Length: 389
Image 1 (spheres, rainbow, N blue to C red):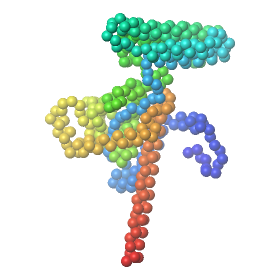
Image 2 (spheres, helix red, strand yellow):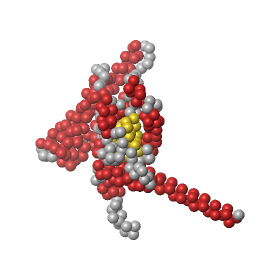
Image 3 (spheres, one colour):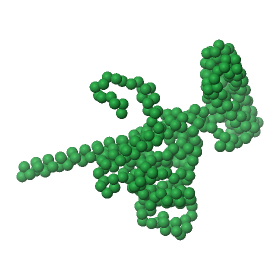
Image 4 (cartoon, helix red, strand yellow):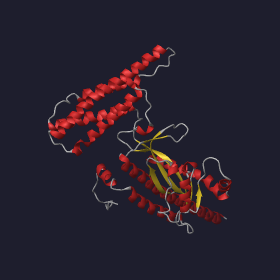
């Protein structure tokens, strides 16, 4: 792809390769994937079906590279960034006030560790439970007060940089963003611990560095929650991943994956119950000849007849094979996304899908080579038998 031959001595650093790889957009990778899938079907040598005609769709969670979020450690994350940026900016423009920034961070960390070690009392004595509760509230208040003092100092530093030193707004955008994060977390800690409120799920943030991270609970055994973003994939019956979609802030029942635009011959697809919604049923039936999408809840007589049809039952039995493709993606690096930002997340997923299809082509060529060698060995064996006779 770089136009460099084997005998060329030019080499590239890892960062150069990373920078160039970032130029690939999910749309470009989808077009490359379309060509790769076509090449794979060419290797299969299917005369009657030169392109995918049927497949199965499912979703899974690609986790983001984040720690488990609590309001106190998210506040510490915000303060840690501010205690790094503010001294750095102050040093560049000759401002004072942050000489002991490392000591400030140690004080915050110590206050955080005290909170993390405290547990609510399970004693039957009401006085003991009340004393432990007051101790927990006091520890949180100390952490909040310390953070608020440093936030006030950070705000004053940014104001001085903007007015006295005319620092561009773009350069101050990041610290201002983390000041807003810290203030939100202080508010939520006060409401939860001191006022006893329950924070609504919609107000919570699960990562300051990967804000697209979602709290996903799919009800899997042993996996109560996953921190990441859902990804829907459409796999052909031959094992190629035809299409994928990153499902930001949406669930299975609100999505109908359009694979037919990429592969016009695609006419049938199976789904699990999680994808059911009246809108999905209508949209998919308009796009596909055969839709295997079970309905949730009680079935009418018409729906019972549809779901007991022989073709429907056969497609539903074969649907579980999509888990093999999802497992292959996860095993080969798509269990956790190591790229940053939602754009990096989408690119990472698209690269993983493309890599999986290239790997599938390698498997086809390997199996074809093994079959050829087996045939040659059999012919040699038969020839030897004739000579011996």
